[in-house]
Length: 261
Image 1 (tube, rainbow, N blue to C red):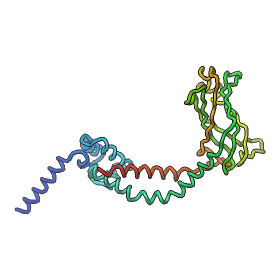
Image 2: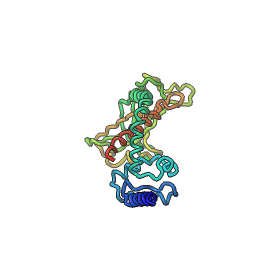
Image 3: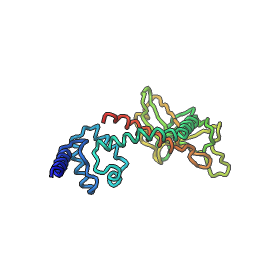
Image 4: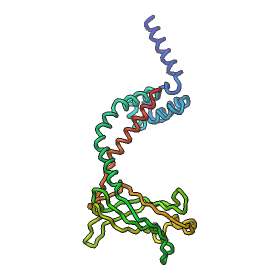
């Protein structure tokens, strides 16, 4: 009888402790469906500070309820946060090391393609049957180590002495044609390019009254390295590893910021 009494008392104490647990120490119901889980989570969240709520969202972002129950059955938010934090801090550095070579190659490739430049850039407001046509004219230099089929630029327009651009657009520069003698834009070569900005009637953001009445205009073209394609119309850069690396680095930084939980 005494043994049963002790076991009963211990069970009662455990139940009372669970009932009194608040915030990130409150046990979640992960095994009885979504509604039960949401109810238990709301009970926990009401006593969790914002930092712990954000940490829990981060910790379970890759789980569905079935996976959460399999990994952390009826766990507390604090236990789940700590386990996911420690897992990231333990495992991610090795994954980053594996991706470093591909990431470094991507960074070097970006630097190489950034040597595609534009000079003698001029903005004009040509007029035809459909009205004013904002146009940027430039000489494109391929200073990269690749022969190009196409590349994109960001065009920015400045007026008078204003430090910020008054118009901005992404422009596509194509060096292929179907005449039978296209060579693309070979490394080391340059080509004159003319960009009409907008569709048939021209982009209204590039022909505002402010722009039309400006005493002087200045246009700039900045290459978008990731957009470059080779003469087979294939993307030159593969950013998959770089994106993976950055995502893992962000996760590691977040995990290291949760050491106080």
